[in-house]
Amino acid sequence: MNFKKLQNQPINIKGLGLLTLKLASNEGNFTVFEYLNKKEKKVELGDEIDYLVLYAEIASMLYQVSGNEISSFVMISEMGGKRLFLIDFPEVEQKKYCDSFGYLVNEQKKLEQNPSFSFIGDVRLELASDPLFDKNTKKLLKTLAGDNQTAWQSLIEEKKDFIKTELFIYSLQKLHSWSFQAIKNQTETLENINYVYGKKPKPRGADLK
Image 1: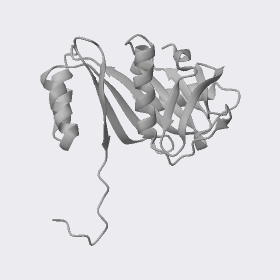
Image 2: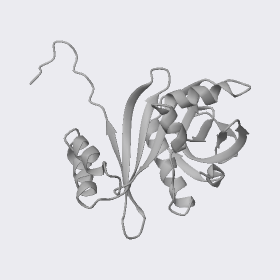
Image 3: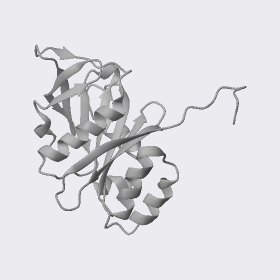
């Protein structure tokens, strides 16, 4: 992907307002961005914002500024939200590594200054033409509820391509949440982003009904 197309793109972050993605450097195979406020001063996002929303919106933005095209890539936040690292995740590397975490660890080692990472955003374009599309999408349907289930059902029935973003916690190598954004078949424009969060476990002693 040509990540440089994100240069100077504005993004609204809850609690921080409108920020601009500023190309900072290229380090190894990573393209690195900083966040600037209206006064063009660098802003650190912290680790408490909703990174799933941030990553899904950046994926959507990249699709649009790239002429309605997207390929598999990974976004990683430096600890404290200091910088955003983006890197392609080509098919040959996907076959070599079982997940994006192993791939990132290998690429991270190549950097002269080894940054500390916090959240991983694994972005994939899922195609309706994939022979496993029906099996994979129907398997997830029963795990969804409400508007997410309705949107997913539409995606299955109309066989829409979609962008899937999975958020992992870097230190735990654990899936935290994920999102999907369907692509309209005729116009290749994007529909609304749907966010899927895991259910919080009930505390001990709580009524299980």
